[in-house]
Length: 311
Image (cartoon, rainbow, N blue to C red; front, top):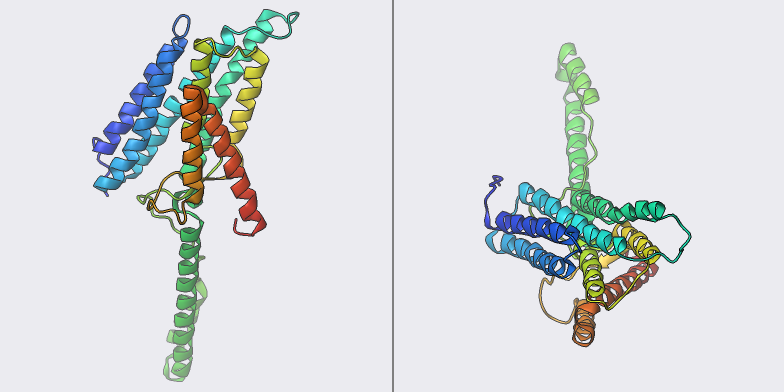
């Protein structure tokens, strides 16, 4: 497919990027407009979902769109949430009163680790065929490749036997040429191929970047509204936990439905039901709780599947 730049999915992705830039400016403005930053990043998350939906509905998948999506996500869900954390850190106290302020201020730059690990998470996703197609389809692709390799070997073997049967009638020069060609030509290993323009698979490795971003900016919104007062040290611990969650090897389930039936979607529907309850009870404060529930359910599913030797 020709990589057209101004397709509907790409325009939606550019809107995602623009919202992420605006959220970064809002977060770093004087006093930190973290309420505005939250809504801008929430809108960016809607665009991140909508561009994939538009690509599926219009069939406008492309390598350019995939790369543009990741670049936009680095800003909207990596840099902008880091800016939110930086503002919260800058205006929060330290539990260690005797530590020089220049030292604690310097540590504050560590919050941008969220942006760095988000970039790593997105780059790994782009090159990981297992996340794009799901384990079943990759296994099928490998099986197909193996079958092709076996078929080629069998064909060449049959050809070699036929050549041996007529070797007595070939001139000596032709025999040498045949032997030389058979020696040089070798079977190359067949690799499992992944169709780049196909929709994504049904699981991810590590916490998805938009989920980490929404949890982060929701906490920033709560701080802005005076609902939480985290010390600087707690913010650094939160950054370390989120950064690891982004690149951890846990297989997390996707919320993308191939159909809306109960069978095969049990964990998705249970998560959606509990998340909706958390949002009703706690409002925006329920977002970090819902993300924590997602990680817990994903980890439980991961270790259960490993115990069954499915992963």
